[in-house]
Amino acid sequence: MGPAATLLALLYLCSLGVCVPTGTNNAAPTQASSLKVKRARGDYPDILPEPEPEPTSPVSDFENSYNYVLSRLAGMDQAIHKLNVGHYTLDVKVSQLMDRLSRMDAKVGELEDSIREVYQHSKDNRKEIGRLEGCEKGRRMGYKCYLVYNSYEDYAGASRKCLERGGRMAMPRDRKEQEALAEYVKAFFQPGNWPVWLGINDLRSEGMYLFDDGTRVSYFQWRKHFLSSQPDGGRRENCVAMSSDDGDWWDHYCDRTMNYLCEFDDRVAL
Image (tube, rainbow, N blue to C red; front, side, top):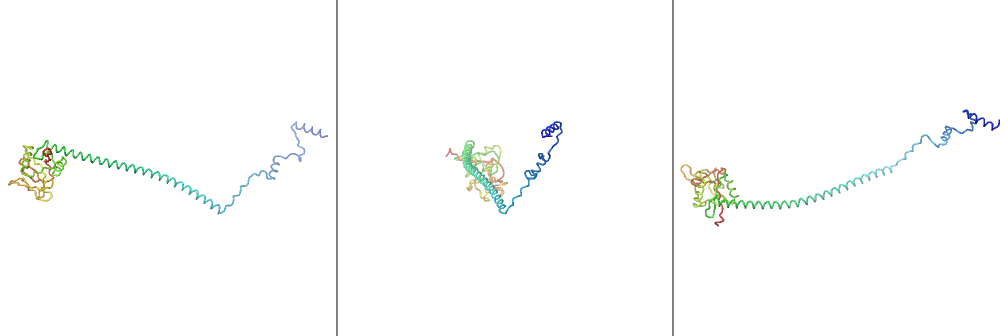
């Protein structure tokens, strides 16, 4: 059978689904044989070998540590810079606050001066009003005015009240003043009998009577009676009051509360 007839027979058989390979020794290699060939040549290895780590040396370790220290120092330097900036900002704000406080302190000082000035004016006004009231409502006697205050104070309180009103506690220095005061006080409280404080005491030394301004008393109007002569309190009773019914003087405890009598300078008469 010639080659042409053989080829036709093979084609016919293949059309029938029956292909008989011929020349298996010369056929193309299968996929398995191809992989075996490629694996034999080393073209496609199944598992790539991991690269071996490069050997380290002491020099490279030192460089790594050195670079780490440098990086940490750089971070610390940056943090210190931030702290310096914050400190400078805080210092500026503190300086501004101190400047404001200084200005405020100066204003407070000016305000305190103004308050003291106003307070002094107020005190002066109260004194002038008290003096005018004493001379308008009270009794004029020569160059003085006297006014009874119908309110209860101890000796120290009465002295303070008279000073606040621009006067002082009444200090009769002679018989004429004593008789005029006795008449005024009697008329004020009539028909009652009420004691009033005078500006006389022996607080500094027992038996040495002084006026409230510190001058020595030279005229006395002590009550003289066979039952109760004055002064009779010794060291216990050191402040002097006038009886309103007869004008006689009595010594009393200084913390006793009673009405009081103030005197003022009469500037109109002056």
